[in-house]
Image (cartoon, rainbow, N blue to C red; front, top):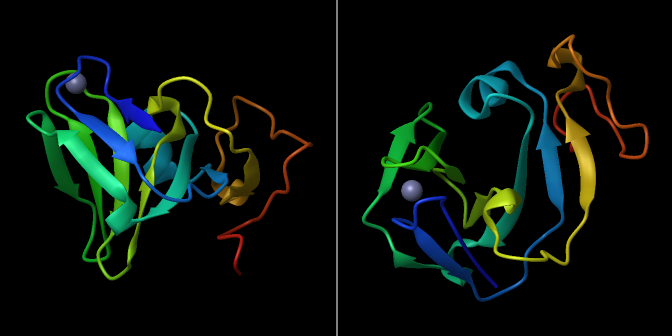
Length: 129
Ligand SMILES: [Zn+2]
């Protein structure tokens, strides 16, 4: 499975299991993405960058970094510092993803300008709470 940013300065391959996506409604994600975000986890070892000229990491906190393209602004990755996993934004995959969306997280922080999707399990916080 391959993916990348809009302009092509960041390209990646997933050579392993891609987990189902989770949407996040929190205020931070809505600031970073302009709206609800979506993340699909993969083992760090399974994510291979085939072009990273545009890739920049933005330190969100001492717990996580956000990867984006400095040329076109595409949001690509979210990386917890102390984890063997990284999350990709499934909208950056080329073609069909083969996954579905298993949860909506931080629904209590969602914006007031759109409804939740009743077909997707919704949680006030993290779905593991
Ligand atoms: Zn780009």
